[in-house]
Image 1 (cartoon, rainbow, N blue to C red):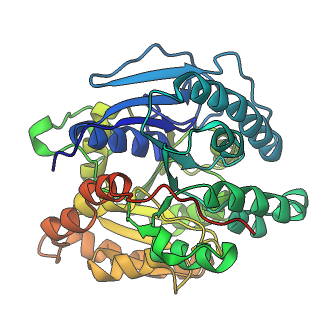
Image 2: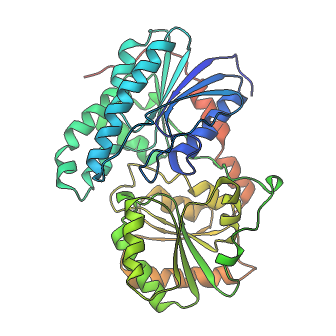
Image 3: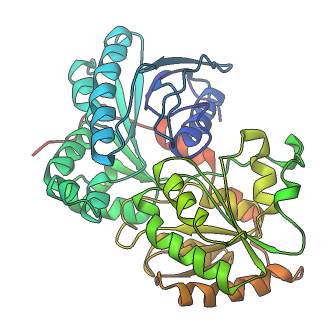
Amino acid sequence: MPVTMQRVLVLSPFFHPEPISTGRYNLTMVQGLCGSGCTVTVACCHPFYPAWRVERSKAQLPEMRIIRGGGWLRFPGATMLRRLVLESWFSIFATWVVWRHRNRIDLVVAVFPPSLFFLGVTAILPKAVRRVGVIHDLQGIHAEASRSWLIRRLVGVIGWIERRGFRACDRLVVLSAAMADKLAESSGIEREHIRIVYPFVNLPGAASGIADRLAQQFPADHIHLVYSGALGEKQNPQKLAVIFEAIASGMPEVMIHVFSEGAAFDAMKSYFAERALPKVSFQALVPEEDVAELYRRADIQLIPQAAGTQHGSMPSKLPNILASGRLVLAICDDDSELATMISRFNSGASLSSWEPADVQRVLAGLVVRARSRAAEKPDIAAVRAFFSLDRLTTAILGVGSSAQMSVS
Protein backbone atom coordinates (compact mmCIF):
# COMPACT_ATOMS: atom_id res chain seq x y z
CA MET A 1 0.00 0.00 0.00
CA PRO A 2 1.55 3.36 -0.98
CA VAL A 3 2.52 5.67 1.87
CA THR A 4 3.59 9.28 2.15
CA MET A 5 6.95 9.59 0.43
CA GLN A 6 9.86 9.24 2.82
CA ARG A 7 13.56 9.70 2.24
CA VAL A 8 15.20 6.51 3.46
CA LEU A 9 18.88 5.72 3.98
CA VAL A 10 19.74 2.00 4.28
CA LEU A 11 23.05 1.12 5.95
CA SER A 12 24.60 -2.32 5.42
CA PRO A 13 27.86 -3.56 3.89
CA PHE A 14 25.93 -6.28 2.05
CA PHE A 15 23.99 -5.49 -1.12
CA HIS A 16 23.42 -6.23 -4.79
CA PRO A 17 25.00 -7.88 -6.73
CA GLU A 18 25.86 -10.25 -3.88
CA PRO A 19 23.82 -13.37 -4.72
CA ILE A 20 22.92 -14.74 -1.28
CA SER A 21 22.16 -14.09 2.35
CA THR A 22 21.92 -10.51 3.65
CA GLY A 23 22.85 -8.93 0.31
CA ARG A 24 19.90 -10.54 -1.46
CA TYR A 25 17.58 -9.86 1.47
CA ASN A 26 18.57 -6.19 1.49
CA LEU A 27 17.95 -5.83 -2.23
CA THR A 28 14.40 -7.16 -1.97
CA MET A 29 13.76 -5.06 1.14
CA VAL A 30 14.86 -1.89 -0.67
CA GLN A 31 12.72 -2.78 -3.68
CA GLY A 32 9.78 -3.12 -1.31
CA LEU A 33 10.48 0.31 0.20
CA CYS A 34 10.74 1.85 -3.26
CA GLY A 35 7.44 0.21 -4.19
CA SER A 36 5.86 1.83 -1.12
CA GLY A 37 6.68 5.30 -2.43
CA CYS A 38 9.99 5.94 -0.67
CA THR A 39 13.13 7.39 -2.19
CA VAL A 40 15.96 5.13 -1.05
CA THR A 41 19.71 5.55 -0.82
CA VAL A 42 21.84 2.54 0.08
CA ALA A 43 25.30 2.83 1.65
CA CYS A 44 27.17 -0.44 1.21
CA CYS A 45 30.46 -2.09 0.31
CA HIS A 46 31.47 -3.40 -3.07
CA PRO A 47 30.44 -7.08 -3.29
CA PHE A 48 32.61 -9.36 -1.14
CA TYR A 49 30.42 -12.03 0.49
CA PRO A 50 30.65 -15.00 0.95
CA ALA A 51 34.21 -15.27 -0.42
CA TRP A 52 35.38 -12.24 1.65
CA ARG A 53 37.11 -10.99 -1.47
CA VAL A 54 36.12 -7.53 -2.74
CA GLU A 55 35.07 -7.25 -6.37
CA ARG A 56 34.53 -3.68 -7.51
CA SER A 57 31.09 -2.98 -8.94
CA LYS A 58 29.45 0.02 -10.57
CA ALA A 59 26.05 -1.69 -10.62
CA GLN A 60 23.08 0.64 -10.10
CA LEU A 61 19.39 -0.22 -10.08
CA PRO A 62 16.24 1.72 -11.00
CA GLU A 63 14.42 3.70 -8.29
CA MET A 64 17.32 3.72 -5.83
CA ARG A 65 20.77 5.23 -5.38
CA ILE A 66 23.67 2.99 -4.34
CA ILE A 67 26.76 4.49 -2.68
CA ARG A 68 29.63 1.99 -2.47
CA GLY A 69 32.90 2.11 -0.58
CA GLY A 70 35.75 -0.14 0.45
CA GLY A 71 36.86 -1.17 -3.02
CA TRP A 72 40.42 -1.29 -1.66
CA LEU A 73 39.61 -3.52 1.33
CA ARG A 74 41.52 -6.76 1.89
CA PHE A 75 40.05 -9.15 4.44
CA PRO A 76 42.33 -11.43 6.52
CA GLY A 77 41.73 -15.18 6.54
CA ALA A 78 41.00 -15.42 10.27
CA THR A 79 37.29 -15.00 11.04
CA MET A 80 37.78 -12.67 14.00
CA LEU A 81 40.22 -10.41 12.15
CA ARG A 82 38.10 -10.00 9.06
CA ARG A 83 35.06 -9.19 11.19
CA LEU A 84 37.20 -6.59 12.95
CA VAL A 85 38.19 -5.07 9.61
CA LEU A 86 34.56 -4.97 8.47
CA GLU A 87 33.28 -3.43 11.71
CA SER A 88 35.99 -0.76 11.76
CA TRP A 89 35.81 0.22 8.10
CA PHE A 90 32.02 0.29 7.89
CA SER A 91 31.82 2.42 11.03
CA ILE A 92 33.91 5.11 9.33
CA PHE A 93 32.16 4.79 5.98
CA ALA A 94 28.60 4.80 7.37
CA THR A 95 29.33 7.79 9.61
CA TRP A 96 30.73 9.72 6.62
CA VAL A 97 27.66 8.94 4.46
CA VAL A 98 25.24 9.86 7.25
CA TRP A 99 27.06 13.14 7.89
CA ARG A 100 26.66 14.08 4.23
CA HIS A 101 22.96 13.12 4.13
CA ARG A 102 21.85 13.91 7.68
CA ASN A 103 19.60 16.80 6.63
CA ARG A 104 18.12 15.01 3.63
CA ILE A 105 16.69 11.87 5.22
CA ASP A 106 13.58 11.03 7.22
CA LEU A 107 14.39 7.44 8.15
CA VAL A 108 17.54 5.37 8.62
CA VAL A 109 17.33 1.58 8.29
CA ALA A 110 20.35 -0.06 9.91
CA VAL A 111 20.87 -3.73 9.11
CA PHE A 112 22.71 -5.63 11.86
CA PRO A 113 25.35 -7.11 11.87
CA PRO A 114 27.79 -5.40 11.79
CA SER A 115 26.87 -3.37 14.86
CA LEU A 116 29.66 -0.98 15.79
CA PHE A 117 28.82 1.48 12.99
CA PHE A 118 25.54 2.55 14.56
CA LEU A 119 27.22 4.03 17.62
CA GLY A 120 28.82 6.76 15.50
CA VAL A 121 25.84 7.12 13.20
CA THR A 122 23.30 7.73 15.94
CA ALA A 123 25.54 10.36 17.54
CA ILE A 124 25.29 12.64 14.49
CA LEU A 125 21.74 11.94 13.33
CA PRO A 126 19.24 14.76 13.92
CA LYS A 127 16.63 13.78 16.52
CA ALA A 128 13.86 14.07 13.94
CA VAL A 129 15.32 11.23 11.86
CA ARG A 130 13.68 7.95 12.78
CA ARG A 131 15.80 4.84 13.26
CA VAL A 132 14.83 1.25 12.49
CA GLY A 133 17.15 -1.69 13.06
CA VAL A 134 16.72 -4.93 11.10
CA ILE A 135 18.56 -7.71 12.95
CA HIS A 136 19.73 -10.75 10.97
CA ASP A 137 21.99 -12.24 13.62
CA LEU A 138 22.50 -11.78 17.33
CA GLN A 139 26.28 -11.91 17.28
CA GLY A 140 26.52 -12.50 21.01
CA ILE A 141 24.62 -15.80 20.67
CA HIS A 142 26.87 -17.03 17.89
CA ALA A 143 29.96 -15.87 19.80
CA GLU A 144 28.95 -18.00 22.79
CA ALA A 145 28.66 -21.06 20.51
CA SER A 146 31.89 -20.34 18.62
CA ARG A 147 34.78 -22.80 18.52
CA SER A 148 37.23 -19.91 18.85
CA TRP A 149 38.36 -19.21 22.44
CA LEU A 150 39.14 -15.60 21.47
CA ILE A 151 35.62 -14.97 20.18
CA ARG A 152 34.14 -16.55 23.31
CA ARG A 153 36.31 -14.30 25.47
CA LEU A 154 34.91 -11.27 23.63
CA VAL A 155 31.25 -12.20 24.18
CA GLY A 156 30.81 -9.38 26.71
CA VAL A 157 32.24 -6.72 24.40
CA ILE A 158 30.20 -7.96 21.42
CA GLY A 159 27.03 -7.98 23.51
CA TRP A 160 27.66 -4.45 24.82
CA ILE A 161 28.17 -3.05 21.30
CA GLU A 162 25.02 -4.79 20.07
CA ARG A 163 22.89 -3.54 22.94
CA ARG A 164 24.05 0.06 22.48
CA GLY A 165 23.23 -0.04 18.79
CA PHE A 166 19.89 -1.74 19.27
CA ARG A 167 18.77 0.67 21.99
CA ALA A 168 19.51 3.64 19.75
CA CYS A 169 16.71 2.48 17.41
CA ASP A 170 13.06 3.48 17.61
CA ARG A 171 12.02 0.04 16.43
CA LEU A 172 13.75 -3.29 15.91
CA VAL A 173 12.76 -5.94 13.38
CA VAL A 174 13.90 -9.51 14.04
CA LEU A 175 13.51 -12.59 11.85
CA SER A 176 11.94 -14.97 14.37
CA ALA A 177 10.04 -15.12 17.65
CA ALA A 178 13.01 -16.90 19.26
CA MET A 179 15.24 -13.95 18.36
CA ALA A 180 12.68 -11.54 19.83
CA ASP A 181 12.55 -13.48 23.10
CA LYS A 182 16.33 -13.63 23.38
CA LEU A 183 16.72 -9.96 22.47
CA ALA A 184 14.24 -8.85 25.12
CA GLU A 185 15.82 -11.13 27.71
CA SER A 186 19.46 -10.21 27.05
CA SER A 187 19.10 -6.49 26.41
CA GLY A 188 16.13 -5.40 28.49
CA ILE A 189 14.49 -3.83 25.43
CA GLU A 190 10.73 -3.78 25.81
CA ARG A 191 8.80 -6.08 23.49
CA GLU A 192 6.69 -3.17 22.22
CA HIS A 193 9.79 -1.91 20.41
CA ILE A 194 10.37 -5.28 18.67
CA ARG A 195 8.58 -6.54 15.57
CA ILE A 196 8.83 -10.16 14.40
CA VAL A 197 8.95 -10.37 10.61
CA TYR A 198 9.98 -13.71 9.18
CA PRO A 199 12.16 -13.73 6.04
CA PHE A 200 10.18 -13.28 2.84
CA VAL A 201 9.84 -15.21 -0.40
CA ASN A 202 11.95 -13.60 -3.13
CA LEU A 203 12.31 -16.55 -5.47
CA PRO A 204 11.67 -15.58 -9.11
CA GLY A 205 8.25 -16.79 -10.24
CA ALA A 206 7.38 -18.79 -13.31
CA ALA A 207 6.60 -15.59 -15.17
CA SER A 208 10.27 -14.67 -14.98
CA GLY A 209 11.13 -17.75 -17.01
CA ILE A 210 13.18 -20.69 -15.74
CA ALA A 211 16.43 -21.43 -17.54
CA ASP A 212 17.69 -24.90 -18.36
CA ARG A 213 21.43 -24.52 -17.83
CA LEU A 214 21.94 -26.89 -14.90
CA ALA A 215 20.45 -30.06 -16.40
CA GLN A 216 23.74 -31.89 -16.89
CA GLN A 217 24.58 -31.55 -13.20
CA PHE A 218 21.28 -33.15 -12.14
CA PRO A 219 20.84 -36.55 -13.85
CA ALA A 220 17.27 -37.82 -13.65
CA ASP A 221 18.19 -41.22 -12.17
CA HIS A 222 19.31 -39.78 -8.81
CA ILE A 223 17.83 -37.97 -5.84
CA HIS A 224 19.58 -34.63 -5.48
CA LEU A 225 20.46 -33.23 -2.05
CA VAL A 226 21.51 -29.58 -2.34
CA TYR A 227 23.24 -27.18 0.01
CA SER A 228 23.45 -23.66 -1.40
CA GLY A 229 24.70 -20.62 0.45
CA ALA A 230 27.45 -19.41 2.74
CA LEU A 231 29.49 -21.90 4.75
CA GLY A 232 30.61 -20.70 8.16
CA GLU A 233 30.45 -21.60 11.82
CA LYS A 234 26.65 -21.33 11.80
CA GLN A 235 26.56 -24.27 9.37
CA ASN A 236 29.10 -26.45 11.23
CA PRO A 237 31.06 -27.30 8.03
CA GLN A 238 33.44 -29.82 9.62
CA LYS A 239 30.63 -32.08 10.80
CA LEU A 240 28.78 -31.42 7.57
CA ALA A 241 31.72 -32.85 5.60
CA VAL A 242 31.61 -36.05 7.67
CA ILE A 243 27.87 -36.36 7.06
CA PHE A 244 28.31 -35.86 3.30
CA GLU A 245 31.00 -38.53 3.23
CA ALA A 246 28.72 -41.03 4.98
CA ILE A 247 25.80 -40.31 2.63
CA ALA A 248 27.98 -40.57 -0.47
CA SER A 249 29.39 -43.90 0.77
CA GLY A 250 26.14 -45.45 1.99
CA MET A 251 23.34 -44.02 -0.19
CA PRO A 252 24.27 -44.54 -3.86
CA GLU A 253 20.92 -43.15 -5.06
CA VAL A 254 21.72 -39.71 -3.63
CA MET A 255 23.89 -37.06 -5.29
CA ILE A 256 25.13 -34.22 -3.08
CA HIS A 257 25.60 -30.72 -4.52
CA VAL A 258 27.34 -27.92 -2.60
CA PHE A 259 27.03 -24.43 -4.10
CA SER A 260 29.09 -21.94 -2.14
CA GLU A 261 32.30 -19.90 -1.91
CA GLY A 262 34.82 -18.97 0.76
CA ALA A 263 37.45 -20.57 2.98
CA ALA A 264 35.25 -23.27 4.54
CA PHE A 265 33.94 -24.22 1.08
CA ASP A 266 37.49 -24.51 -0.25
CA ALA A 267 38.50 -26.63 2.74
CA MET A 268 35.56 -28.98 2.26
CA LYS A 269 36.29 -29.22 -1.45
CA SER A 270 39.92 -30.15 -0.69
CA TYR A 271 38.73 -32.73 1.85
CA PHE A 272 36.69 -34.52 -0.80
CA ALA A 273 39.37 -34.15 -3.47
CA GLU A 274 41.37 -36.72 -1.46
CA ARG A 275 38.46 -39.20 -1.48
CA ALA A 276 37.00 -41.13 -4.38
CA LEU A 277 33.42 -39.95 -3.91
CA PRO A 278 32.22 -38.58 -7.26
CA LYS A 279 28.65 -38.13 -6.02
CA VAL A 280 29.66 -35.09 -4.00
CA SER A 281 30.06 -32.08 -6.29
CA PHE A 282 31.22 -28.55 -5.53
CA GLN A 283 30.16 -25.56 -7.59
CA ALA A 284 30.29 -21.79 -7.31
CA LEU A 285 27.10 -19.98 -6.37
CA VAL A 286 24.76 -19.83 -9.32
CA PRO A 287 23.92 -16.45 -10.89
CA GLU A 288 20.56 -14.82 -10.20
CA GLU A 289 19.07 -16.00 -13.48
CA ASP A 290 19.69 -19.66 -12.53
CA VAL A 291 18.40 -19.56 -8.94
CA ALA A 292 14.86 -20.67 -9.83
CA GLU A 293 16.21 -23.60 -11.82
CA LEU A 294 18.44 -24.67 -8.94
CA TYR A 295 15.48 -24.72 -6.57
CA ARG A 296 13.41 -26.65 -9.11
CA ARG A 297 16.07 -29.32 -9.63
CA ALA A 298 16.87 -29.87 -5.96
CA ASP A 299 14.79 -32.78 -4.64
CA ILE A 300 15.86 -32.08 -1.06
CA GLN A 301 17.42 -28.88 0.27
CA LEU A 302 19.68 -29.06 3.30
CA ILE A 303 19.63 -26.39 6.03
CA PRO A 304 22.23 -26.96 8.78
CA GLN A 305 22.05 -24.83 11.93
CA ALA A 306 24.78 -25.32 14.55
CA ALA A 307 23.55 -26.42 17.98
CA GLY A 308 22.70 -23.61 20.39
CA THR A 309 22.35 -20.90 17.73
CA GLN A 310 18.59 -21.09 17.13
CA HIS A 311 17.98 -17.88 19.11
CA GLY A 312 20.61 -15.99 17.14
CA SER A 313 19.27 -16.16 13.57
CA MET A 314 16.72 -17.59 11.16
CA PRO A 315 17.86 -18.95 7.75
CA SER A 316 16.56 -16.48 5.16
CA LYS A 317 16.55 -19.18 2.47
CA LEU A 318 13.75 -21.16 4.19
CA PRO A 319 10.79 -19.28 2.62
CA ASN A 320 12.20 -19.74 -0.89
CA ILE A 321 12.68 -23.47 -0.35
CA LEU A 322 9.13 -23.81 0.97
CA ALA A 323 7.74 -21.73 -1.91
CA SER A 324 9.57 -23.92 -4.42
CA GLY A 325 7.61 -26.94 -3.18
CA ARG A 326 10.78 -28.93 -2.51
CA LEU A 327 11.57 -30.92 0.62
CA VAL A 328 13.78 -29.67 3.43
CA LEU A 329 16.22 -31.60 5.59
CA ALA A 330 17.23 -29.46 8.56
CA ILE A 331 19.83 -30.31 11.18
CA CYS A 332 18.90 -28.04 14.05
CA ASP A 333 17.83 -27.99 17.69
CA ASP A 334 14.51 -29.70 18.28
CA ASP A 335 13.02 -26.59 19.90
CA SER A 336 14.14 -24.24 17.11
CA GLU A 337 11.72 -22.24 15.01
CA LEU A 338 13.31 -23.73 11.92
CA ALA A 339 12.09 -27.17 13.01
CA THR A 340 8.67 -25.71 13.86
CA MET A 341 8.27 -24.08 10.43
CA ILE A 342 9.20 -27.27 8.59
CA SER A 343 6.56 -29.16 10.56
CA ARG A 344 3.98 -26.40 10.17
CA PHE A 345 4.16 -26.46 6.38
CA ASN A 346 4.72 -30.24 6.11
CA SER A 347 7.79 -29.56 4.03
CA GLY A 348 10.31 -32.14 5.15
CA ALA A 349 12.02 -33.29 8.32
CA SER A 350 14.40 -32.05 10.99
CA LEU A 351 16.67 -33.69 13.53
CA SER A 352 19.00 -32.40 16.23
CA SER A 353 21.64 -35.12 15.88
CA TRP A 354 24.75 -34.55 13.77
CA GLU A 355 25.59 -38.25 13.80
CA PRO A 356 25.89 -39.45 10.17
CA ALA A 357 23.81 -42.58 10.79
CA ASP A 358 20.95 -40.54 12.25
CA VAL A 359 21.03 -38.10 9.33
CA GLN A 360 21.03 -40.96 6.82
CA ARG A 361 18.00 -42.51 8.51
CA VAL A 362 15.96 -39.30 8.27
CA LEU A 363 17.22 -38.62 4.75
CA ALA A 364 16.09 -42.10 3.67
CA GLY A 365 12.52 -41.21 4.60
CA LEU A 366 12.72 -38.00 2.57
CA VAL A 367 14.11 -39.90 -0.42
CA VAL A 368 10.95 -42.03 -0.39
CA ARG A 369 8.81 -38.87 -0.31
CA ALA A 370 10.83 -37.22 -3.07
CA ARG A 371 10.34 -40.23 -5.34
CA SER A 372 6.58 -40.21 -4.87
CA ARG A 373 4.94 -37.71 -7.19
CA ALA A 374 1.83 -38.04 -5.05
CA ALA A 375 3.72 -36.85 -1.97
CA GLU A 376 1.94 -34.08 -0.09
CA LYS A 377 3.46 -30.69 -0.82
CA PRO A 378 3.29 -27.46 1.19
CA ASP A 379 0.51 -25.00 0.46
CA ILE A 380 2.47 -22.53 -1.69
CA ALA A 381 -0.14 -19.78 -1.36
CA ALA A 382 -0.05 -20.09 2.42
CA VAL A 383 3.75 -19.99 2.38
CA ARG A 384 3.82 -16.80 0.29
CA ALA A 385 1.20 -15.15 2.50
CA PHE A 386 3.05 -15.99 5.70
CA PHE A 387 6.53 -15.07 4.44
CA SER A 388 5.53 -11.77 2.87
CA LEU A 389 7.66 -8.75 1.97
CA ASP A 390 4.69 -6.48 2.77
CA ARG A 391 5.04 -7.41 6.44
CA LEU A 392 8.59 -6.06 6.46
CA THR A 393 7.84 -2.76 4.69
CA THR A 394 4.91 -2.19 7.05
CA ALA A 395 7.11 -2.85 10.10
CA ILE A 396 9.80 -0.46 8.85
CA LEU A 397 7.56 2.39 7.73
CA GLY A 398 5.05 2.08 10.57
CA VAL A 399 7.28 3.64 13.22
CA GLY A 400 5.22 6.17 15.09
CA SER A 401 7.67 7.61 17.58
CA SER A 402 11.17 8.97 17.42
CA ALA A 403 11.82 8.52 21.12
CA GLN A 404 14.86 6.31 21.56
CA MET A 405 15.01 3.39 23.97
CA SER A 406 16.65 4.09 27.28
CA VAL A 407 20.19 2.87 27.75
CA SER A 408 21.18 1.47 31.11
